[in-house]
Length: 393
Image (cartoon, rainbow, N blue to C red; front, side, top):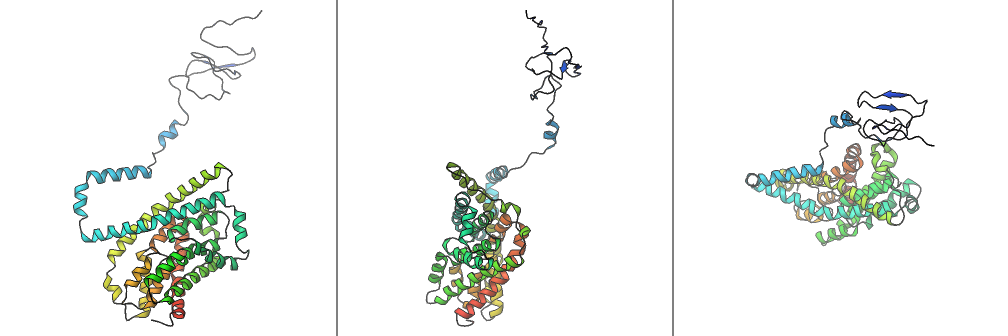
């Protein structure tokens, strides 16, 4: 016959040898060997159970102190919402303050840079997502020679298949490094893709009719810049100069998981690069209105100074590689050689690209890579112009 324990608001599952400890908080008896904590009221509490629910009014979450100590994190969506609300509230004062011609020109340049670059940035992140989701590191390894000295020029020539500007090549180069491609080869692709693709070369031919040497010189100078920078990185570059997050390899999944990998990679790269594109566009807009046109026109009789100034101007203006040829063609007072250097330097390094590289590969990489690229591109563009154009003209 089984004895039934009296129900007095306490569930007693203890064995005769089980010690009980008084709970000073709720006045309950605590059984260290109990396995049932489902009773309520003054029930026994099992210290080995996994249920952390409160048993009394004085019970507290052990993480509550940490939660109270943490400050709420400000997100980009909250900042955007605050800026939008402020713009709506102060619409009239802002319109009056921004009514100057200089501000309108800067706003036009900013919108033009972002609108020109955004489609190619989207193209780049789409290709980046496809590489991450559908291309394995082994497949990439089979496409290039094993020796870095040969892999760099092959990767540079492969840049001709990407019809876009430098905004598209940055996320693709990042994904190539993440999938195990040598850094030197990926960087050669990064520099060659926006400068030697067919769209850019056709635009150059249209902008300079009757000057086929400009097309040849631009292709040669830009490819030489990419290859020389790749070789320099293979010889002197260090892996720690590139941010560790770039080397996080995305392993291709199977079936429907690949589609989600593609979407997540493309979304991540677009958000990461889009903000720096806006920053570069703002910098370009300010510099466009700050550099007087008369300074450029006064360089007609100074070839060396013209080369240096046009190289720096290409960095500051941050034009799209598919539109810079028409800007260079409009500077008819300058010789062809400085304008060629402008076309070679622009797709390789500018303020917009510097911002994108800083956000993608790390600030340490951009600080080392950009100045070296500027020097190499200026030299390669000058040499290619002297050879293809038949001298300094």
